Image (tube, rainbow, N blue to C red):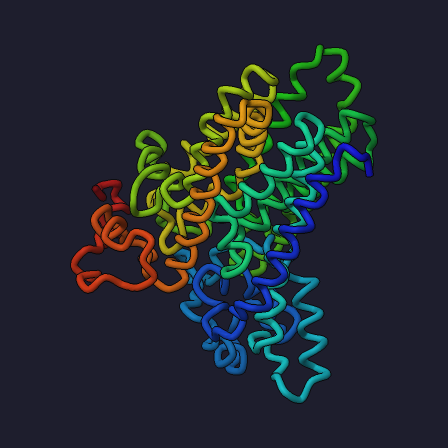
Length: 447
């Protein structure tokens, strides 16, 4: 390790210690409802395949076991074929921890080896923490190419503690922390490939990209970032890498094959739209609400993102190509993400789909911290005090959400400020919530 990278190295391991301590002290795995809603859909492939051997969930013992998953359901096509709405990609990242948990349950007399008892829930949460930290590690290695060690160290802390990644790394093993890892890995591999091209690195980029899309198809947008950086080269340079691009593309497509075979097995069709009537309204995106609404605003519940917004200005003068690539990618991601009929994405803490794109904001964070680190102390001290306060707010909001003080989908401006920094429900909580109209939203008529 280079001497100049010691600060960010220590920052990473300090964050790891924090995550580990919170993992063991919170004991969120004790909740029987951990495997519920979207998590149950992502996870169902594993017990269905390796424990019950019943992907179609037709056997009585499978249906009885599936009752242990909260709010599990299967979608149905017009011919009556049933299938899981969510794609199977996340099951691949769950799987190492699932198999360890299953092995322990088989050897233990204390827990049933049914896919849902406590060892499996521990495994799921451990996988979330593990891949979050692995994403931080690869993000650190990428940022060190452009920014000072101290700036990168602060960026790692703020990306974790100042955003809703903190909550999703510990409490709910949804797709977002895992895709944060995959995006960070793709960026790392891309820059490694630029340093010294090899077919092995191209395979890695293809595999990570394919898995990213398999988990959340709209996250294919993140590939715009390396694509913009790559096409800056002249035609001759691009031509020399055609073979690597073809190999990466083939590997990416290979990662999608399990889902195609699943759809064919379940419905007889190789490709289906598994979300049925749910759709995007691309001509009417709710970007402002997605960023600043009290219901789910990304910036409202991850207030340290204000520094990233400012940081993009500094990034423009630091590296215009990185600035353009990250801004273009992030803007298109915002447009697509908040064009979804349910722009608040049901229950969740903050704008959870944007966690996947946090590595793009990391460049802006690092740019502003690099400038701040050389600023006069009279400027630096109060600004860092504000930063610490914003990170504290984000962590406290996560605690409020865990305690249902922040409502899962019905927050209002009045409720937000009535219970600002309170650790209990206000007396008129039910009168202050603002429930969304899901039926109207499906028609793009929700206010």
